[in-house]
View 1 (spheres, helix red, strand yellow):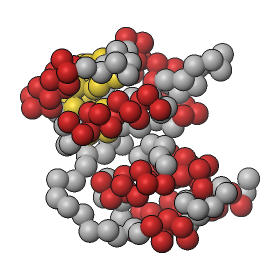
View 2 (cartoon, one colour; view 1 turned 45 degrees about the vertical axis):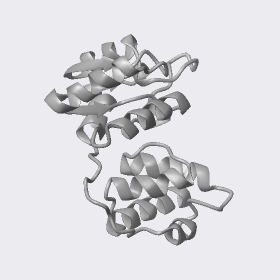
View 3 (cartoon, one colour; view 1 turned 90 degrees about the vertical axis):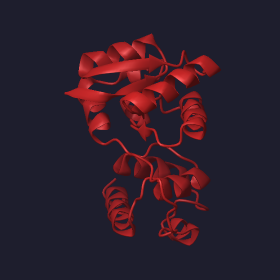
Length: 187
């Protein structure tokens, strides 16, 4: 599997894992120390070949993703669930710990944000009814929903934004909630 776009990762170990799983070029942000020079390189890469942001599913990874997204709004996004990025010894988390198949699957389910303004199809009321906000089990439900829809971990406000940004339809949302509810019943 060869990837046309340049993949933005946090460090050298992430690059090693990506190159082990697929044919791709990467830009490393050097962790959360993303600076102006790296942002300019990412902008240039976006103009030439396109960019896929593939950062760790933790706070620094989400922060890097937000910084890039604010500066270069139409980059693509790949996500991996937290449980697929935990080191074998349980100490550490990151793309570098994911297996090759999980990396390939994440890159097959890349999302590109829409360029035009979306109408709000999934409302905050829908999120409340689905127990994704304002409920004691909201956080684990949001995390699992992020895995099902391949949109990453979010808080309630971010979830609403990502559903809109990645053009998740009410039908896709309903199917994901049905799957989530069914999994909880069989747990």
